[in-house]
Image (cartoon, rainbow over all chains, first blue to last red; front, side, top):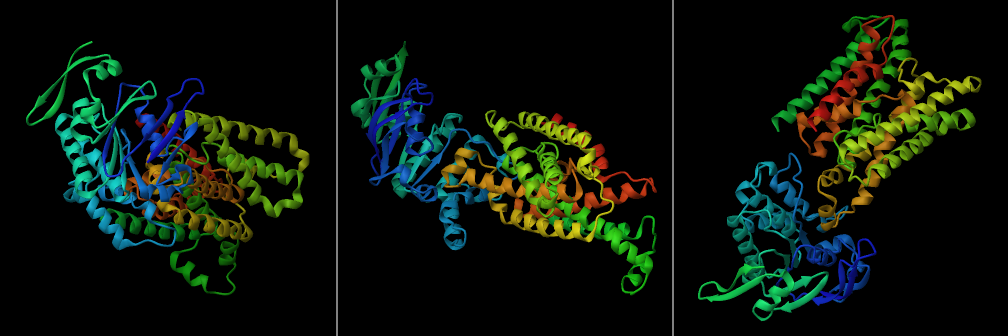
Length: 256
Length: 321
């Protein structure tokens, strides 16, 4: 995916994205990080076409995103939002089956393929046993996996995740990031996500896009761009970096 | 699953029982067997009277109940709001006012009243939507806006009637609902448009199901949220408008019936829409039948009974919100 000179302004006064150009590499895990209000979710919303840029172009496979029909685009890219209202009286399987919508037309549906896609989405998210359970009865971590399963049922090549770990406790955070990792490694999905935790971003990403005030400050592989200086510049935090045999690179924040 | 089937069976049976009871009770009384025997006789003055006077009324009640209830389900789905009802939020009174207005000034267009009622209802629906959109369609806000719209159209209608004595408008049927003196031509109007509306409503069930998702999520799976909303709302308005044209304004059915229906058969619109139609038909037929029998020879309109039950029910729902 390519973004060229994207400007987004919700109120025509301040630019929430200010002349952003970048590209997302196919088959990689790309993580967008930065302080609150830096425009990382806005960038994701432009990529996923839920926000139209005020100027500039975003394109996928050399086609402008606005040229895609909604269902056609949904077959290319799926997104899981941060907060989702949980509908009443709906089973996991039913919700996941909504993800098949882009593959259906008014007269045509391939039930065999739908069933396979739903089964696959449930099995990789480890929800097969609970498929007939009601959504309301699930824990936070399971709910997040259900929404991911719905996105997976779309069978798109690109999966976007907006702060997938924010409301989860540490166990479910790791479980979720491992799932994302395996979706990338085992099934070849291109992942674009927004994370808050810098160490998680370092550990689980191939590429990092670091933002501040609606601009990209640095982008590239985590080891190349995440340094003491840049953390100070972007977050205003003094940090030290250590190398651990098992963990690799990790960061400790010292103070402000 | 078992509960669903049981609910369908019980409500269907109750509807049949109510139909038979309603047909045989009233100013002309007939026994059950007498009634069925007489149905196949050629000259029985009693059954002729029932055929001409009571059957049309019953069929109108059945269709109006089904149409208004399904209209409620659709509106609740479109507005993502359990409190939406065509009567309460002013769609019915909008339809009633425009209908009255057109008939008064252009009596020659009488045969097109369903169309004008539809336009009036659609306008009211648009106003409610537009004015409560900013608050993210919050249930309470929407009801408040709807009540204001309803008051405005009801007021306009009443004002119109007070000026319009000379216009020779029969107003009683517009303000409240009164199912007496319905004719077979009323039946053909509501049966035609009502059936179309109900079939369309059922055809849209999967869209109604998808609207439980938040707009952003629904859009992300390639769902045309705006288009679906518009079409579902149009069918809801059609159903409400046709009921107004033939049976007058009956509020609260569209609130009460879907709520009970969801408790019994769940939230899947594939099951919910047909069940709501059945239950709505039962409730209005029952209300009308009771209304004309409990204080006979006087009559309590079905709409009055519904308001007496529906008002407290709305308070109950608001407290739960």
